[in-house]
Image (cartoon, rainbow, N blue to C red; front, side, top):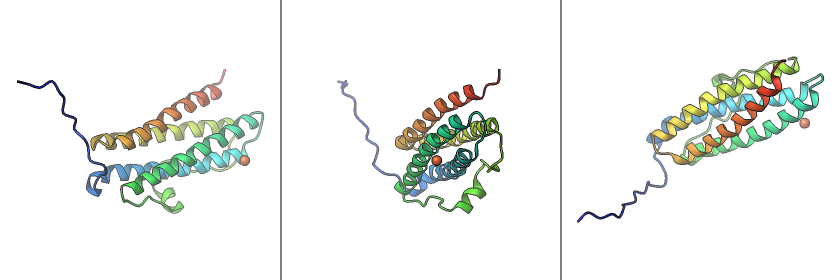
Amino acid sequence: METLEKTKIYKKLGFDSEETKEVVSNLNLFLANLHVHYQKLRNYHWNVTGADFFDIHETTEAEYNEVKEEIDEIAERIRVFGATPTSTLSEYIEISEIKETGTDLKAMEMVKEILRDMEILLSFMVDTIEAARAIGDISTDDLVTGFMKRREKIHWMLTSFAKED
Ligand SMILES: [Fe+2]
């Protein structure tokens, strides 16, 4: 007789370096882009001028503090897999799709630049989530999905702030 009891299948705890290769490489790219984005937020926090100074000064500070935490979580996730996170500024600059800007942008140009960065970050988050799902890596999926959810909200707020009319 067929039993109605379901057999629970447990995944093992931990992955080997061969199966995590794709996830690690996506995490490293995401990490590099996050670092450049982080420094741009600091740049705009310091150098914004004009009527929107206080809004942008405060919002960029809140955001770079969030990004700082994300950077740490991503790098440590890479260490969990026994790999080495990309850790130098020169490598970040070299591989990051997000590019630096000068300090002399107008306030709204800064906001639009941040929004563009967030769209680039989104593509790296999606790639990382897909790589994680492909190997059943629920924790990386959950971690990066959380970052995505948080960023979608701040993206909406900044888009509303930057709307002209
Ligand atoms: Fe400050």
